[in-house]
Every structure is written in structure tokens, then in C-alpha cells.
Image 1 (cartoon, rainbow, N blue to C red):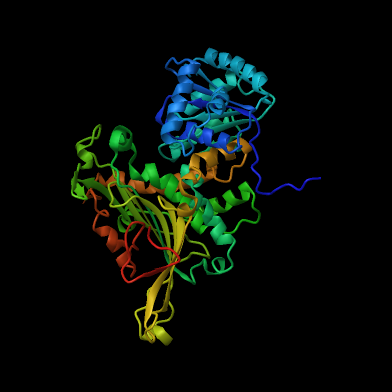
Image 2: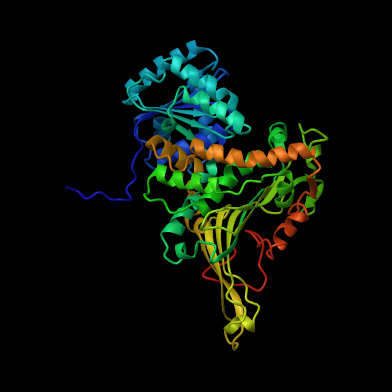
Length: 519
């Protein structure tokens, strides 16, 4: 008997992948490249098929040409072998479909059976809905009524955010889906959960004996989560003006990252146990019980005209498809607390916004300093120790400690040690959508959001949205495009004796880098 290599690539079980919205931007930029990368790495064997579905007419040849163009532009692998490309492309077919007509789904079922027979697929079906949320329910009902769920294999539904507009709409949407699919068959994508360093948070915490014992209010002073973008709303003005940063980024990405930092160790490395702990962390978030509490702890901003690197930038209200009197927030910052035994009293500062100076996603863990009347602390202004988890665009970790300055007696200086994952792996770092599609095909649900996670996140942010609605826009603060947001953002931390730490792309003064440094 040959010993199995634990690191050997395991191909996902054969299935038909149905891409609803196959002519859209998400399919072109993310889904087609992800499927090609999985195929290239042996994670998709030959027993699969992809059915592109949209309203506009398209032949199989035109569809395959679109897929080729997408891969050439956006994939981390290039098409280098014509024969291998033809073999891959032969698995792709296109069907024009009116999603409101159940007869079209019956025709799709007939096509599916032909593909099962052609490629030896055991009736497994994965439905990826790159559609507006209001279409999730009608599509699900027609999948059921058109016979698409009657095969002998498994059925899985993958849906994109936003999942609803608030808790009430999310409940209605979930009720529709639950009439057709079981909860364990629904995979709600938050692509941030597919990022390498977000998934590394659990490994970092639970696999290192010198982190987990310190991961509590006895040793951590505060946690800072930054998700900043340099771009404005671009062509998404119409959508964004109805959404804003709170619904577009906080309810999903920020809440997920916060829950992974704050969660307790799961009893088993099982998807449901891990997600149970994330839900407990979200339930422990201190709710904002009044408008006054929101005003004291939450900052709502919108970018006005400004500049970056000498280039003038347009204000949000001057963007295409945006209401000239819009009060929609493009910036959000808040001080939140996780009221459980581990985190009681530790502030979590979160911020996200558009038209900020750098594009980055980072988590900064600031540890409490040593007592200020002992040994070196009473003679030196010691900087706090930091653990920084860099998620995007650079992936890695760095730790800042205090050390003796070489050649000088008893002079202490901060020293930073860095591990840059993206620098090591380079351009072939797996994309988030590759991991998530692969996980969905294998039935691995750890990095997808469960309904109770979604509900808890909406319950928390709805209180903020309600307070903003009541104040009629009075809380909105303008900030120049290219800046770090409203001035009050710094005061949010200063009142607790803290400040925002520099993020990726910003140099720190008087810090010595060893074992690599800022790239």
C-alpha cells in the first residue's frame, strides 16, 4: 500500500457548475479565472462542466472566446498549451435563460443530464448566483419547479453579498431560500474570508503557544482593523448611493474579520464548531442602545473634492449616478466592545472608507506596555509591542518589539520583524475566489457565512442605520478625498489614550527593520 501524501492535491468531486450572470463583470474578472486556476492545479478533474447562463444570446464558441479573453486578462496562470486549452474549454457551454420562465429551467435540466453523461458527472450541481439579491428567491423556486434539484447527487447554492438590505429584508430572503434549500446547502460568499491572511488568523492564534495565552484583556490594550480604498465609487455610483460603507463593507467584511479576531478556540476543527464561535463573538458585541451612543462611538463621513499625489479628485456628490444632495457615507469608523470574559474593556477600533491615502486591509493588535516604573521603562519612552496582520495588498505579518540599540549602552529602540507571504509566493498566490469555489465544491463551509452570522451582523448595524436615519444627515462629516477621513476619527482613539498606527505603505519613524523590511 502506497502512503498518501497529506499535501497531495485532491480534485473536487465532479459537478456541473451553473454560473447565473455569466456575462457580468464578476464572472469575467473572478469566476472564469478561478475555474481555470483550479483546473491548472488539478483541483478540477475532467468530470466537470460549466454552464454559463444569462439573458443575452451567445453561442458556445462565443462564450468560450469570452472565457479565454477573461483568463488572458485576469488569471494568474496563462494559456500556454493550445491542446490543454481546448480540453478545458470543451467543458464550457452557454444557454440563454429567462430566469422568470420555468420552462427554461426544464430545458436546462435536459442539458444537465446530457453533460452528466458526456463527462461522467454523478448528478452533483453547484449553482452560483452572481445576480441581484432580489432574484435569489425566484431563481431558487424555478430551480425546484424546473426539476433541477431532482438529480441523485448533491445540490449547493452559492450566493454573493449583499444578503438583504437590513435584518428584515435578510429574513425575508432567507425564508425564500429555506423553502428550497437546506441551510447546509447554502454557501453565502464573503470573498474576504477567502483571503490567505484572513484564513491565517486562526492558524496564527491557535497554533502558537506564545500568542493564545496573551490573546485577552490582561495583555491587549486595543485592536485596530483598517480596510481602506484609494478609489471612489467609480461606475458603481447608483448602487453605492443606496448602500453606503455601513452596508457595503461593515455588515460583512468588517464583522467577519472582527469575529475571527475575537472568537474563542473551537472545540473541534469542524466548520460548524468554528462558525458557532464566530456567532458567539458577534452576539457579544455591545449594541448601541441609543442615538447618543451611536454619536459618541461612530463616525460617518463622505469624501469631498481633494487631491492625491498632485492629482485632483472629484467629490462624492459629483460622481456619476450620485444624488447631488446625498447623505450616503463613504467612510465609517467606530469604537466597539466585545462584552465577554476574554475581551471586556478592550476597545476595537474599526474603519473603512473610499478615497483614502493607501489601499490596505490590516489588523493591528496593540499589547499593553510593561509597568512604567520598572527597569528600562522608567528611563525610556518604550513603544508598545504590536502584532500586525497584513491582509491586502501585501500579505504577511510583522511584530514590533523593543530592543537595545547596537553599540550604545542601555539605549532602547523599537525593532520590527516581518514575514511577507506575498513576497515569497509572488504572483501565484491563490485568489480568494479560487479557494471559495474549491471549498464549495468539496462541501467545506468554514469560510462561508451561516444565516445566524448574517442575522447577528445585521442586528448590530441596523441600530446604527436607524440612528443615522433619525438625525437626518446631521452626523455626516465631509473629508477631503485623499485624506484619512474626518478629523474626529483621531479623537475617537485619543480620548482613550491611543492613536491609529501606520498601515501598509506608510513608514514608521525610528523603527529598525530586520529579516526583511518595507518592500
